[in-house]
Image 1 (tube, rainbow, N blue to C red):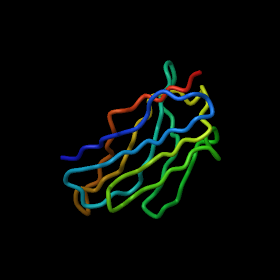
Image 2 (cartoon, one colour):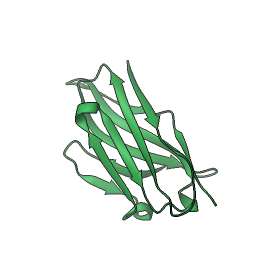
Image 3 (tube, rainbow, N blue to C red):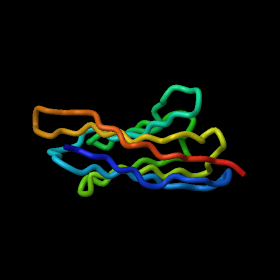
Image 4 (cartoon, rainbow, N blue to C red):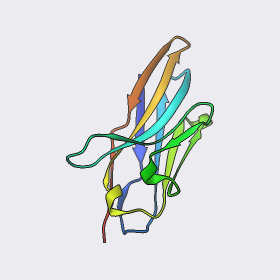
Length: 120
Protein backbone atom coordinates (compact mmCIF):
# COMPACT_ATOMS: atom_id res chain seq x y z
CA UNK A 1 0.00 0.00 0.00
CA UNK A 2 1.33 3.40 -1.04
CA UNK A 3 -0.03 6.80 -0.10
CA UNK A 4 0.78 10.29 -1.32
CA UNK A 5 0.06 13.19 1.00
CA UNK A 6 0.14 16.75 -0.31
CA UNK A 7 0.69 19.82 1.82
CA UNK A 8 0.74 23.50 1.02
CA UNK A 9 -1.64 25.41 -1.18
CA UNK A 10 -4.11 28.07 -0.14
CA UNK A 11 -5.05 31.62 -1.02
CA UNK A 12 -2.42 34.10 -2.15
CA UNK A 13 -2.42 37.50 -3.82
CA UNK A 14 -1.09 37.96 -7.35
CA UNK A 15 2.69 38.14 -7.27
CA UNK A 16 2.87 36.02 -4.15
CA UNK A 17 4.47 32.65 -3.52
CA UNK A 18 3.42 29.22 -2.34
CA UNK A 19 5.22 25.94 -1.81
CA UNK A 20 3.61 22.55 -2.37
CA UNK A 21 5.04 19.30 -1.05
CA UNK A 22 4.06 15.70 -1.69
CA UNK A 23 5.40 12.83 0.41
CA UNK A 24 5.02 9.18 -0.48
CA UNK A 25 4.87 6.45 2.14
CA UNK A 26 4.30 2.72 2.26
CA UNK A 27 5.83 -0.19 0.40
CA UNK A 28 8.30 1.69 -1.82
CA UNK A 29 11.24 0.08 -3.60
CA UNK A 30 12.15 3.15 -5.65
CA UNK A 31 10.54 6.13 -7.37
CA UNK A 32 10.95 7.00 -11.02
CA UNK A 33 9.37 10.22 -12.28
CA UNK A 34 7.61 12.70 -10.02
CA UNK A 35 5.42 15.53 -11.15
CA UNK A 36 2.76 18.11 -10.50
CA UNK A 37 -0.43 18.55 -12.51
CA UNK A 38 -3.25 21.03 -12.17
CA UNK A 39 -6.87 21.25 -13.14
CA UNK A 40 -8.83 24.47 -13.32
CA UNK A 41 -12.65 24.50 -13.36
CA UNK A 42 -13.96 23.46 -16.75
CA UNK A 43 -10.51 22.55 -18.05
CA UNK A 44 -8.54 19.36 -18.52
CA UNK A 45 -5.81 18.34 -16.14
CA UNK A 46 -2.45 19.57 -17.41
CA UNK A 47 1.18 18.91 -16.59
CA UNK A 48 2.83 21.72 -14.64
CA UNK A 49 6.28 20.26 -13.99
CA UNK A 50 7.98 16.89 -13.89
CA UNK A 51 11.33 15.55 -12.73
CA UNK A 52 12.81 12.15 -13.57
CA UNK A 53 14.94 9.98 -11.33
CA UNK A 54 17.89 11.29 -13.29
CA UNK A 55 16.76 14.87 -12.46
CA UNK A 56 15.72 15.80 -15.99
CA UNK A 57 13.10 18.50 -15.58
CA UNK A 58 10.25 19.70 -17.77
CA UNK A 59 7.99 22.68 -17.20
CA UNK A 60 4.84 23.87 -18.87
CA UNK A 61 5.61 27.00 -20.88
CA UNK A 62 3.16 28.97 -18.75
CA UNK A 63 5.18 28.43 -15.56
CA UNK A 64 8.78 28.54 -16.82
CA UNK A 65 10.86 31.00 -14.85
CA UNK A 66 8.29 31.16 -12.03
CA UNK A 67 7.95 27.59 -10.72
CA UNK A 68 10.70 25.26 -9.53
CA UNK A 69 10.32 21.52 -8.99
CA UNK A 70 12.69 19.61 -6.73
CA UNK A 71 12.82 16.14 -5.27
CA UNK A 72 14.22 14.68 -2.07
CA UNK A 73 14.82 10.99 -2.66
CA UNK A 74 15.68 10.30 0.98
CA UNK A 75 12.21 11.54 1.99
CA UNK A 76 10.31 10.31 -1.10
CA UNK A 77 9.15 13.88 -1.55
CA UNK A 78 8.58 16.19 -4.49
CA UNK A 79 8.21 19.93 -4.01
CA UNK A 80 6.89 22.74 -6.17
CA UNK A 81 8.00 26.27 -5.36
CA UNK A 82 5.64 28.71 -7.04
CA UNK A 83 6.68 32.36 -7.31
CA UNK A 84 5.09 35.37 -8.97
CA UNK A 85 1.73 33.65 -8.96
CA UNK A 86 -0.96 34.81 -11.36
CA UNK A 87 -4.75 34.46 -11.24
CA UNK A 88 -4.53 31.98 -14.11
CA UNK A 89 -2.52 29.66 -11.84
CA UNK A 90 -5.68 29.09 -9.82
CA UNK A 91 -6.46 25.37 -9.88
CA UNK A 92 -6.42 22.16 -7.91
CA UNK A 93 -2.85 20.86 -7.95
CA UNK A 94 -2.18 17.12 -7.96
CA UNK A 95 1.03 15.29 -7.22
CA UNK A 96 1.93 12.22 -9.26
CA UNK A 97 4.69 9.72 -8.58
CA UNK A 98 5.70 6.62 -10.57
CA UNK A 99 6.56 4.21 -7.77
CA UNK A 100 8.12 0.79 -7.92
CA UNK A 101 6.95 -1.53 -5.17
CA UNK A 102 9.47 -4.10 -6.46
CA UNK A 103 12.08 -4.04 -9.28
CA UNK A 104 9.47 -5.25 -11.77
CA UNK A 105 6.29 -3.57 -10.54
CA UNK A 106 5.68 0.11 -11.22
CA UNK A 107 2.45 2.00 -10.60
CA UNK A 108 1.35 5.60 -11.00
CA UNK A 109 0.01 7.15 -7.81
CA UNK A 110 -1.86 10.43 -7.31
CA UNK A 111 -2.18 12.74 -4.37
CA UNK A 112 -5.54 13.95 -3.09
CA UNK A 113 -5.20 17.39 -4.65
CA UNK A 114 -4.71 20.78 -3.03
CA UNK A 115 -6.42 24.02 -3.95
CA UNK A 116 -4.34 27.00 -5.03
CA UNK A 117 -6.24 30.25 -5.42
CA UNK A 118 -4.56 33.43 -6.65
CA UNK A 119 -6.76 36.44 -6.09
CA UNK A 120 -6.66 39.95 -4.71
